[in-house]
Length: 582
Ligand code: ARG
Image 1 (cartoon, rainbow, N blue to C red):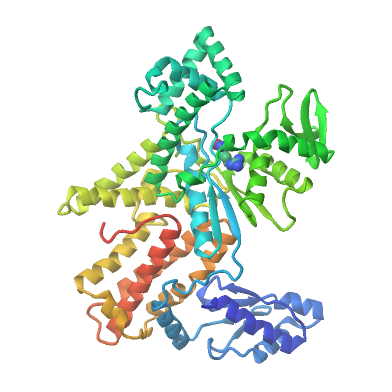
Image 2: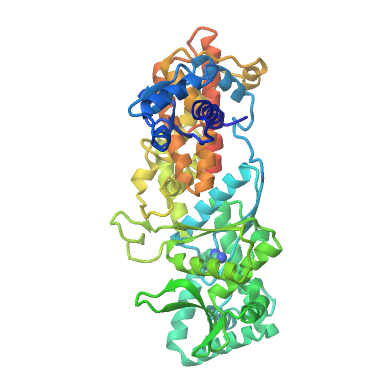
């Protein structure tokens, strides 16, 4: 199905051409307020200026040339030259009826699918996952879902931090504390990675012998000593299992085969530097290999290098990212690479992208994007911490979400089995945590407030999930057989203002999905769903469904079903589940 906004744009373009003989693309926007209609043609003022014409008169001429009666009521010229369009009720009725039979609810696939690599999650494997990993996981997964739904080929990449000096310390500690795991006589099982790291660090700081062993382990690791590699692999595997358990609790699409961490590029690093050198891009500075790029200067105005090899021969985060980028372009054939990473890494990605382009590692047409996100803050507007000021483990946060959500569920539904109550609480709690994040513009910091995000009122997941539940309870109460409901060709009558308003909003679904995907802003989809739930609530309050006379009853049931399906699809694209009772 074609997007409404595209159909209207084409008609508007034709009218502008007829009225001005110009091929000026119209600027078509959904209207901000109902009194301005449903859509608005903007840009007539600019056109009038260009043509030295009176804007209102030009708008009138365009309206006269506009062939749009089949879709809209008579267009209105407003203000200095806006053209307001209001959809006809019968057109909305027939379009909504088409949506009832469309399993994509009117959202077309893109005409030209791309291969899109999305780099997200990417925890550092030396430690346990903490709240800082929530945003790259949630936002990245949502972008992957949106992109895939629109028909692109998505390749997820988990660029985990699995190499570096910290691993020397962890390997040595492993040797000291669980030797039986290293000789294979018992499997490695670390209950708490964070604690393991803390103890290793403590020993490292207090015991000179241990610190020496740890440093030697780093040297051995870099020299690919088989014994040391074996220990590293063991620890890495254990840490990845911890991460996978969190991913699964978070419901991420990221799979073990998507893990390609920093260590995967070790062998490529000397080649990357050699190639940069061959291209004449490397300058030595105090023994380090640096690339100076135009446009990158430090605060004091001096040139800011990208260091690709340290004086001790070690490579850096940027070198690894260059190698990874080459792999993504060369092997994965990416048309677009999206990095979901902390806003504090902005300069890093700017440098990597600029250097990759300068070195010809990417085609000019390849899109490289850093989707930067801000911090998650506590209610005191400072970084989110435990009461004692420590880092909050992600596992603990998810436990707490589930626990907090369980209370209202068990109070409201004492008749449900404890198992079902827990399952509902887990969907609601996790949904609330995810939605609190996704409903914010990613670049902004946001305040993580348990009471707000779990509230049934306001722009929250529970509010949206509850709208879905309401529809399900109507169906249960009326013993509605959905197959039967859909067996006859859908016919809608939207005579009540609340029905029409709800249906018009349902018709708009493709707009926020396309926009959220193109701008990397899931909050656009959240706002749409929030408004949808609001319109549904008005409809639910004003329009009886089960007690309505036919054909209104069936029409309203169809509208309910379309609302539920839209909520389910929209929440699903955010990575949030729905349940039929709560
Ligand atoms: N491991 C990094 C961190 O914890 C995130 C990786 C982001 N991706 C990348 N290709 N650099 O901050």
